[in-house]
Length: 444
Image (cartoon, rainbow, N blue to C red; front, side, top):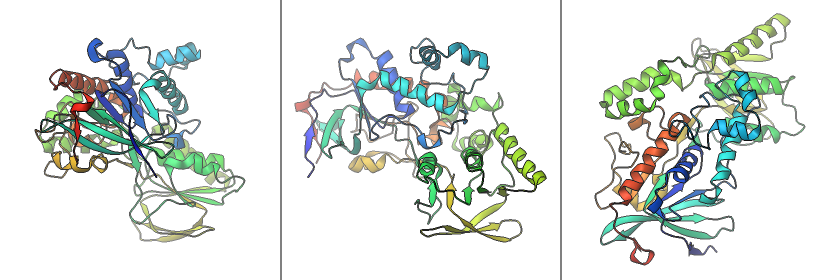
């Protein structure tokens, strides 16, 4: 039976829920920018994973980042930071080699190592293996001045921590089509490498990959290369893979200044900008990878052994998995032609959706304002708009595309976003009522 204990720690200025790149950038900002009068223990981050990890299932050895190394955890906030990607390269003895490489986009494996390197330097602010299971309001003189955050630790014990503000950096959750559940023969690409390792000595005869974006193309290329005797079928609704627009002017949609413009824009203009520039990020593929896949398809046609099969403008009409295989029906959207395939595995590279912080907020959710489409209303400083009696701050890192634009959950603005949230928290701290642990009462 779990027993709840209250951690013997100060009342924090902020508790970060989740510790992916966004809240890691915030932890570094705390380490570098914390005011001298903030006192000890001003920040705590809680992460359910046993150690830092970011999309480990897609750390394919030749996959590169789609964002410049200069948009790391710190550089746009503090170019002189010791936490920069360049400082990481120097510490690893690869700075000169990287410069000679003449490439803005490091390997994804390398960038993940950078993130781990940075996370280790702020490890005193993080509790790994602690899953947040609830956030309750804590009142003082009739107002919600803070929050009690309850975690379940590795020993299944419940522990509570208190803070004036909570910052949700919950990341993304895998998205599968309605009626589809992951299993031994149906994977989401998030778990690709782990699932492939689980095959052991088994050599599948056919994979089916669903999706038209960067992850789908990477999965297709990886499986085709890793299993040289296996057929790989790629199914997507587009007529062909579409290239990502990473041109200089289009990339300005990810600039910090663009967030100001987007936030201030009328609702119809916001939607227009998202529609116009979705091809910078959604369901698009790097042109080099598109050309590589086309080269493979053409080469196999020349050699008369077509192992990489594309099903464009198509959908999966049915997927039926049993212990031994997956029966797949592919339907052409243009002709209605039906192809039946017996596959060993179906891999869905069908994207992600933002995690919903309201699942943890309980009764506090009713105090959070929503717009006419049911979405959380969020201020420019990423603070959720709440009822006046909630004086403690609820901040979001992610899930704010409708208010802050396409970069809301991306690395592009992680450094600047962290600085804006931290400055908001410490500005409000000066106006907050004095608090001691005994003066606060959890709402019942």
